[in-house]
Amino acid sequence: MKPKFDKDRLILGLAAPVLAIVAALVITSLILVADGDDPIHAFQVMVDYGSKSDSQVWIINKAIPYYLSALAVAIGFRMNLFNIGVDGQYRIAAFFAAVVGGALTLPGFLQIPLIIIVAMLVGALWSGIAGLLKTTRGVSEVISTIMLNSIAASIIGYFLAASRLGEREGNLIHTPSIPASSHFFTIPTTPDPIDGFIVVAVLVGFLYWFGLSRTRFGFDLRAVGQSESAAEASGVSVKRMVVTSMVLSGAVAGLVGMPTLLGVSYNYGTDFPVGIGFTGIAIALLGRNHPAGMALGALLWGFLERTGSQLEFEGYAQEIVGVIQGVIVLCVVIAYEVVRRYGLKSQQRKVGAQLAAQARKNDNAEVSA
Image 1 (cartoon, rainbow, N blue to C red):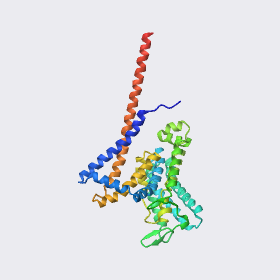
Image 2 (image 1 turned 45 degrees about the vertical axis):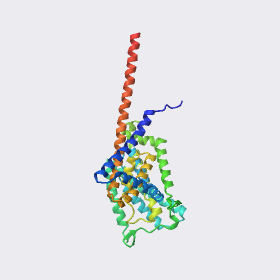
Image 3 (image 1 turned 90 degrees about the vertical axis):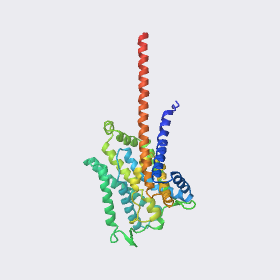
Image 4 (image 1 turned 60 degrees about the vertical axis):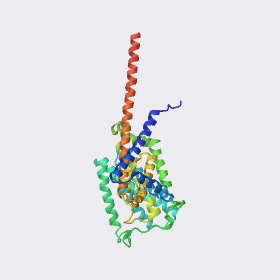
């Protein structure tokens, strides 16, 4: 039987992103006008600069770790867990992966997978600590992951000292560099190559979608996220699912630093990028935890960062990009909630009308009898 086309659901699905985009443009324009700037010119500068070929490559490469970070956060979100520790998880994972990679000289086809596996294991272990604390001691994952972020930074700082696992190069201290045979491949494009880790990001995004949407495990995970008591009553072990989801979230978080380690810096140093985990939270919210939505959100974030530098040359305030990013996230969250509530009320009205019609039909039948 051919499924019935739900026009109302399609309209509501399109209404939320359209409403969010319009609201973000209006609010951003008002902020620029209040600051005495021309919003039309600002948007034109962003579009023109962002559409250049070198900017497009830069945006794609920048979006790869953002997307992986969002996927790590989204696994927790779907479980109703707030893994705010992705930042510490990917950093400590990248650090120990860099130590292992710098200490070995295996062929690339062996060493690259080994480095990635080490990063995933360390990230899973670090995130699993928060899961165990929640299930055994009732500690909120928000508190434990925040503390684990600080502990991770302290551990890295301790071992990165030149007399331990690090070496000094000018003002920088970093781990021994991994051999050239362990550098990740790139996709040749003009004028710059695209990081080959995009293949891994796409694969992880597909596994995320398939695992949550097409497997029993994904159903159990989503069931626990919606109602722990109902899931427990149906035979799902809530504690096991909490630990498992945190471990998986940490394993994906371990991949966040790999594009930089294997394709840019080739070591972990004091200049290694930080804050990607917190950016992933915003992108997960922006993409509504959907793999395609988060991919678009990561690209949008990269676009704003790339074009923001050009706005500074045009005389706009440096902080305007951060304002635009915050406005977009807020508008998306609010728009989807407004549309969700409207859709729920509309559905309730339809059900009420159907029940009333059925009641009138029954009354008429009784009168006729």
